[in-house]
Image (cartoon, rainbow, N blue to C red; front, side, top):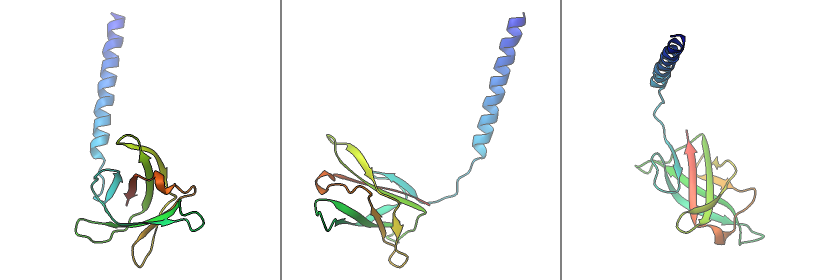
Amino acid sequence: MHRKSRVIFLVVVLALLAVLAYGFAAQNTVDSSYAGDGWAGVSGYYVKNIHYTLDSADPGLVSSVSFSLQDSNGNDLTANSVYAAVADDNGGTPGTWSWSDACTQDATTLVWSCSWTTEPAVESIYYFRVSAGQ
């Protein structure tokens, strides 16, 4: 009989924890904002006007990339955190991603610029990815 009581007690505790976890998760709200990440279509930002800058000493390397983040109406957007990445092709999917240092935005033009500590080779760039969030 004592063993049955422990099993019932354990079931009650687990049920209580499940209810508490659900209640906590149900109270979380996230403000509406732009956010996006991916190498396929994502919601939030549209990446436009992509321009690569080649390394002046070795034009086989990309020193930086610039682009605009826009909404669906073509309005330039700001963000709190932006990174860019490039990858080679791995049989129809991205291979190894090479992420930039944190990108900066020109306050006047709202164009984003990103550079790499280790510059990727031009010939290896097949995919371009941007991660941005407010």
